[in-house]
Image 1 (cartoon, helix red, strand yellow):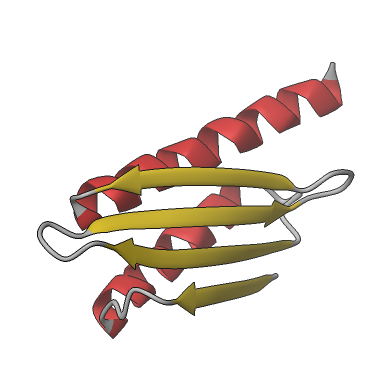
Image 2: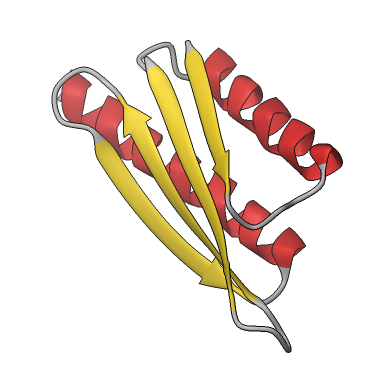
Length: 96
């Protein structure tokens, strides 16, 4: 599986490693995941707004998810929950 992270928000390596760790833990649960592309952007100065766009490569059509928050930790948590929810939804759709 490929993980591509486009870091336009100049996040630290610690945050990038955390994102990769979360994606690999999701990959262990869902074998259908072929690749993940994550686009990280930052808008504004005070307070900055962080935006993530996540493209999940699965069999069939890709899933594209958008998320926005002023708090980076909250954004990463919401994004991983969103990825997990859509993969569960896709897995149920594939079985039934």
